[in-house]
Amino acid sequence: MAQPEEKAPEAATPAKTENEPKAPETSKAPEKAEVVHIVTPVLSKYFQLQQSAFNIHSAILPAGTTKNDITNPRLWNHVGTKIKLHDEIRVMEENGAFMARLLVTFKHSLDHRVKILEYYELEEIDYEEAAGLSDYLIKNRGAVGWCVVDKATGKNLYTNLESQAAALTRRDEHVAAIGK
Image (cartoon, rainbow, N blue to C red; front, side):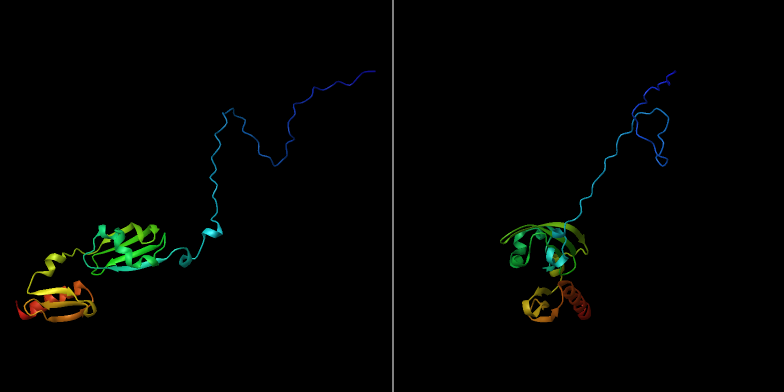
């Protein structure tokens, strides 16, 4: 009796399905694998309402404060107990000369360090020149506020002005009115 012909064993390959895409038949070198960036989600303990994570303060700085003065730790001594690490402080010079946003980068007792995030010059005000142009002084007299003072008599001509810039404007109007 004749024996059936034996078939040569086929290479062990996985069975192909109909939906499986076919590999291109060109002979190319394998492509480099793309690096996948895994995004780590924000943990709930690091996601807080703004009021409890850090505070945003605002401060009006005295006339004549400079950009360098803002980062001086002594400027913040009186409000040190209200400031925490990573708080943000928005500052404005009282006459509108500049506006800045600061970040508290270090806090230990009354030692505070801040970094300037943003700084904008708004108006160029020469306080030295503006204060001594006439026979009238511009002074901040505490509870009376900004005043226009007559140099000769020492009397307040105008009181309770909202800023030094407003006092300078009032003084200039007064000088123009009397014709000096």
